[in-house]
Image (cartoon, rainbow, N blue to C red; front, side, top):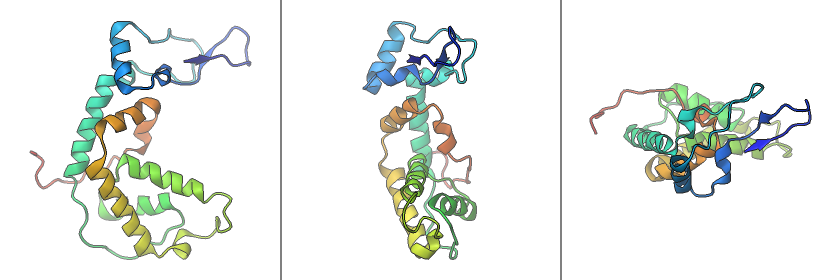
Length: 183
């Protein structure tokens, strides 16, 4: 979907992905297959959606592979130590480093939302470990992670990824050694 900005007359910039007008994920692949919906290249685009990203089937395949991989990554069985933290995202980053494994895309999104919830709160400037005991905060993240790894639908992930072309920012590039990778 294109939106015209008032900066330069006669110049257009793309602001969002053209796929956001479709409600159902299934409609996207069918519509792309019937006709070419890619917008023509614009000279002053701040962001162009690559053709691979707009292919709904490819995104669904990626989501399936991602969810299968995340289900193979073992959950830690013991806690290491108290992790001091100022924010939920800071705690998540410390957990990733300490345990050497990624957190699910949905868990990373939730950490971002929880940090946003603290904005303009009375205790916004207080470190998170002063409000919630670090063990409780860490176990909360691991419980949430377990839910996301075991129950998330690849089609739900694909719908989120189609709506957000920058989804890869919330996918961790940590690859632990798996015990049974042939699964």
